[in-house]
Image (cartoon, rainbow, N blue to C red):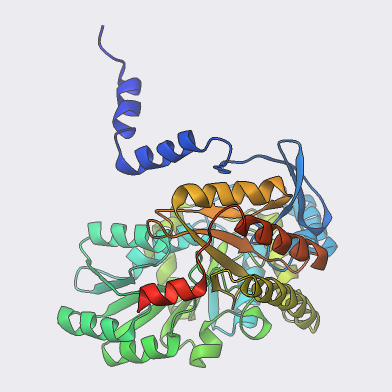
Length: 419
């Protein structure tokens, strides 16, 4: 009897190199992998329960802690009472009033003429990027751009758009690539505002100057800067460039906002064009109305004097962790944002290091290839405004103990390698 098609499909998928790689490490480190976890309970100050063990969660991107804010929670409750759980229609047909109000508030806070809300940043990138360029245009992507940008670029390429990449955060290489690719009608340069695995920021001003000299527009996925960087949490673009005149700013409503969805900050003209050209806007389904009510509440908080207190608390926590990690001699990547990565290197040691911290009461994310370069594994720590000082001290003490168990690369070692 022949093998059933479903079994054959599973067998074929298991021949994929990435799946074989991931399953290999899952089998080698069954107690250290710390992926696909189930959180059974959550409490104040980022305490969570996993497999019966209570740990401090340093893996949450609710950076301002607004998921625990009573006003944001109350907005969700009132939104459910007003709209129900879902409005059940594509926005191409109808939007609830809360959607319009949320977009207006986002634009007012961000400093753009308009904003367009998507169900997620991934759907925004996979819809807007192919929607903004055509066969006569050029799409240029930073080699380390987020996966969702890369996926959007694949769709654009399949549609006939020329696709090229440039060296990570390198304005000179961007210039080279743009000049070599001419002639084109217009170019779109897609980058991250904050690179999520390291917390690194691109040289936006220099990249924008290159773009403007070469008939190119910047497309900045600012998801990891939303609500935590820039004046009033508006992200990286406005502070770096002074305007949005040559930039689309994409932000997340699920990280610093602690809600759901994403937005693209743009002009009214481009808002209309994206509604017609962006398939994931038309077919992706809307953000549930209760979350739109919560988005409005978060915008009010960000535009109030209270925001400065919230972000000051977050920055104090980030500084405490970053400075403490450097005093221990750890190689710290990032530090300008709430994403602080400690370099480990080897994949297996990265998993074991994460498990060591977990057993001592702290959950951090063990990140390995392909999210980071091979043998470039990191412990990705995400600091929140509502982490307690003693929790950060406890994590630093656990890192100190980890150094006696696993050889962690020192900054001078990395400097010698770079030289």
